[in-house]
Image (cartoon, rainbow, N blue to C red; front, top):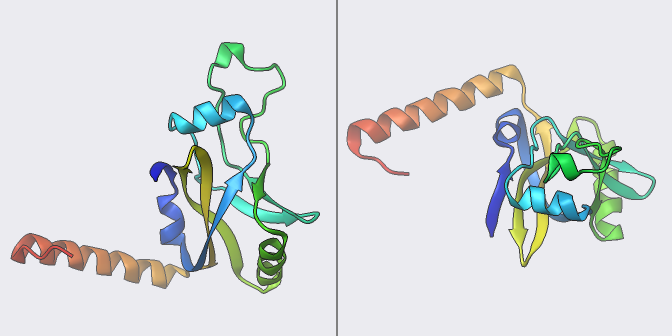
Length: 149
């Protein structure tokens, strides 16, 4: 599976409890643009709307800007493709307080563009500081002792 975009900030801002794999409904030029690595997942999230799951704020610029339709919107909401039962269970979990559905990465699987979604809770500022301390301690151990984990 070739990763085409990653939302590294999501793993820092959210404590991920569960992961889901979803397809994404794209037009032809959006698929070409996404497969060439021009997909931006920063500050995007998924919300349930009318029985569907929509990816909001994900930006896919046109593949050929001069050949794009005049009304093309790179950050339009895009439908995520999941089973109805998965959508219902996710909608129920999202109604609980402090849960969010954020895209973690986008990748190509068997020719299709897929999105890995993470169901997570927002981290508090102290938790973020603790994560930074752990990362820096691990980096120091690696540089001093040849520790590689």
